[in-house]
Image (cartoon, rainbow, N blue to C red; front, side, top):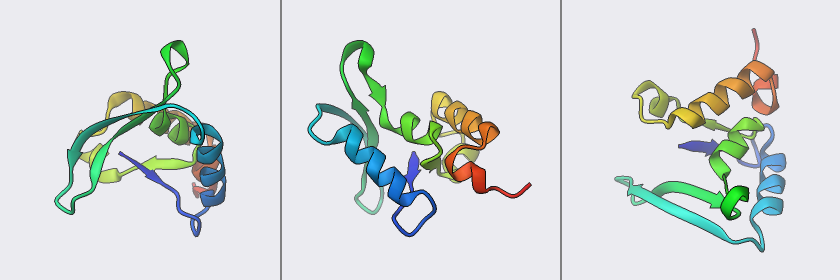
Length: 102
């Protein structure tokens, strides 16, 4: 569900840097939930274990470094906790949301 910012997009470099620092040389758990018509595997990635386990989608979205695909939200396919993380980030105007015009 999360659309990660690419290098050419605002906050793309910051997203890449944060992801590298968080994921490289760490144990991760990938939960595959499906495959798109184009053959892209979809799912969730978690970093850490036990009480330290956290969703990369929620982490990136809550920092304003990624956003949800609007279609997933409109069709009610986005997980509630991820939608809530984006709403909080938007209200706090962090990352991508700091660029939004009123």
